[in-house]
Image (cartoon, rainbow, N blue to C red; front, side):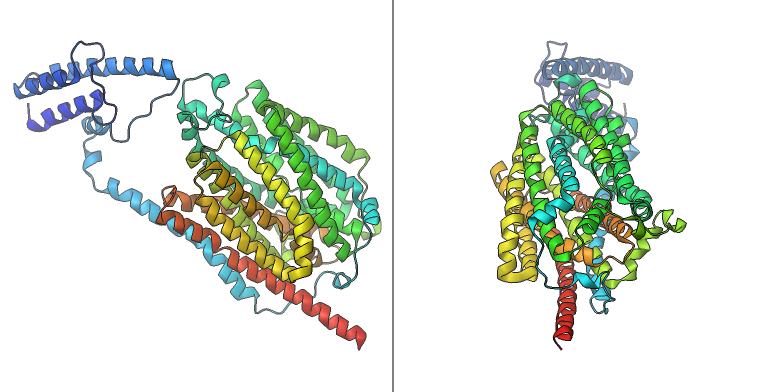
Length: 591
């Protein structure tokens, strides 16, 4: 036998026996110890024993090892994965050229470089937007009468105008919060099936994330989240601005009913998968129905029913605060019930809201304010051009998109970081959601009002972005579930502080007669950012080899925080424009 063949056969024996990862001290199906077997095999090779006989001996050993692994699977339920280097000798037997080429070792490094380049590319968008928009003079805002220092109207008047949508908004938030924290674990339970031979009924990643098959499913679920996130802007591009244009011509209520029906379909799919054992692909395939834009047209409904900028700013804070409380109640209920029951409650709630929307919700757009339908706006993406008619609207839109890009990208990677390194389970997620709801409610109801009187809208923006970046640092350096919960809560609270300011700016950026198209187009921009953010952040995190600490984690934290600078600059510039307009009109009226 040639020396090369003898080395390969002996290496195959080492791989099968487990010296490349799975060591054992006894040969399965034999009374020989491992050392005795290898010594006899080496002696056979040195004595020029027939090569075919050696291969038969190796085949018998491989069969015995496979039987032993099946016994292990039967006892633990965990399907053993091939060790990273255990197949080296067998790969040499099957395809020797694969291990000798230098391209295989250089390819991962080159791939990481490309991944890093793609992840860093979005960092250029913000500075370029600032370079393009900050020097530009602003066109007139959508409604001149919405810039002023008038006092907001009474709370009783506000409730009388918007209680129908307000109640539906609160109920939708409640039912969504019951099931939303469980969504990730519905995917984990289903993808974990590919990493274990346990029956599906015995897989409960929502209760124990330390199980090997649950840990193996975490990267796959993160990739699925990225894919679904990329599908969301496509759905928004196809239907968002188009639905907004239709609502400008035929009213808000019919379009809101269509949106509710679409979201009900997605919720029922999740319910069916969790209760009846359907394939997870039913939930994934029907997920686009739940991606139909739900913010822009209801926000246009609020603007038209209130019709007063100072009251609108107060209303947004009160409505969002009450929805946070509803989300807190829904999260508490979701934590008390099983995952299956959480999806059942969510689907039943959306089903009950449908007749309420049909028979109770009034129309906000009077017939005399409905504009004739421009058929060209029905084409996907055509209605988006309304954003580019005003540099003020474009500033608000881009700054909001960058902030959402950062926030949703951070959330995705933080979820993976907490699950992999802190063993974050379903109960931890519900506790985190509840703490976030309490802190966000405090920020909107108390923090915004106090800070507004003390430091103004600009100060609120600076404080909010600064606190969010500090929370990012502490969250990604967390060593325990408690530390991650506290840091993540501060991050979510800080990101909600600027909401009343941003919503007020968005209402001012709307051209007359195009409220629905404008708000839907802005929602499209935001959702594109929400989809691309997780993709970019996940790419950066993967390129840095999923760091838990060290300089690679420092690089990731810096990458995250840098997105705040252009978003804050554009929002501050928009506020300067509003203040200048207010000062000019005040001086004109007094003169």
